[in-house]
Amino acid sequence: MLDESLLDDPHALARADTRGLLLGAAAAGARVRTAARLTQEAGVQDLRPDGRPRTVLVAGAGPEAATVADVLGALGAGSCPVIPLRAAGPTPYEPRWTLPGWTGPLDLVLLTTASGREAGLVDLVEQAYRRGCTVAAVAPAKSPLAEALEQARGMTIPYAGPASPLPVGPSGAPAEDLGALWALLTPLLTLADRIGLFAAPPTEVQAVADRLDEVAARCGPAIATYNNPAKTLATELADALPLLWSTGPTVAPAARRFAAVLATRTGRPALAAELPEALATHGPLLGGTLSSGDDPDDFFRDRVEGPQALRLRVVLLREAAGRQAVSAPAARELAYAHDTPLSEIAAADGGVLETTAELLALTDFASVYLAVASAERS
Image (cartoon, rainbow, N blue to C red; front, side, top):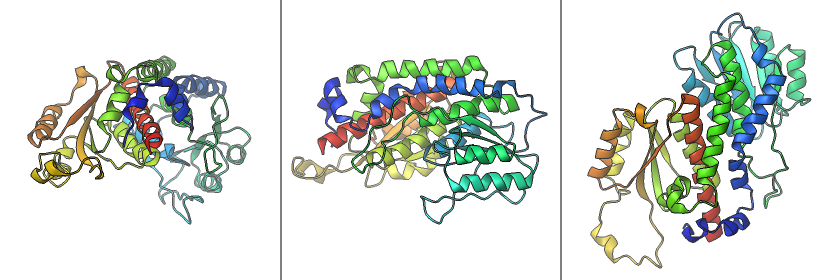
C-alpha cells in the first residue's frame, strides 16, 4: 500500500527517506556538471581519433551499466553497433566478462564502475590488450582498474562520486547512489562525440544538466502531488502492474530502466516493451485476469481486510509532442477498449539528449516516491 498523505508532507518525506534517495535524485544535474569537468580535465575533448570504431563494447559493474549501454546504443543507432557485454558467474558478486572471439584492433571497449575494484573488469582490460583493442573506462582514480588501464595504455576518466558520504542502510551497506548513472554516463557521452558515435558537444551536456535541474524543481518533495508529475505517477502506480510502453528507440532505455528500478527499489514488477510491438506482446494481457475491467464478484470483496490485487496500468512514455510516434493513438485506443487506465509521460521539447535525460530523471523520482511511501506505510 502507498501512503498518499505522506507525499504531500515534505518534512515527513525527509524523515521517511532514510536511504537519502530523494537527495540523490535531486543532485543529478550537479553530478553531470562534476563529471563533465573531470572529463575535460582528463583530456577527452582534445582527442583526435583516426576514425569511428568498428564496434563499441560496453561492460560495467552495478545496475547502471545496463542503462549506460542501452542509452549509448539508442543514441548511436545507425553509426556503429554498441554491444553490451553480459557478466557471467561464478556469482553475482564475482562477475566475469569475456570478449567475443572476433574482437580486435578495430574495436573500442568501454568500462564503467563506481569502485574500480572488480577483478573481472581488470581481467577484461588484459583481454582487450591482448586483442589490440582500445580501452577506456570511467572509474575512480588510483583504483586497481585505473592502474590496469595505465599499464595497458588505456584511458581512465575519473568517476565523479557523490558530494557527501552515502547513508548506511539497515544491513550496514551504503545506500543506493542515484547519481551513479549520470557520473558514469556523462563522460561516455563526450567520448562518443569525439569518436563520431553521435553528437554530444559540451553545450548539449550542459543542457542535460539544466534539464535534470528542471525535473528536480518540478518533481521535488515540496511540490504538491497535483502539480508534481513524479508524485502523480507514483500514486497511479500504487497497487498496479505497469505496462511500460515506449514510443521510440531513444525513449525505450527510460522504460527499461524504470522497470528495473521499480523492481530493485520498490519490489514491484513491471513489464517494458516498445511500440508498436507492445500492442501485440502485451495486448493479450489486457483481456486477462489482471485487467482492470469490472468483475461482478469483485464488487462484494472486503476491500478493508482483503489484500489489494494488482491491476494493469499502461504507462506510455513518449517523446516531445512534436515528435509523437504514429503508434501512440493505437496504444491509447487499445488501453481504453479494455478499460485499462493509462498514464502518459512526455518530455518537453528539446534535443534527444535532453529528452532522454528528462524521462530517466522523472521516472527515477517516481520510483523513489513509491519506495519511500510504501516503506513508511509498511
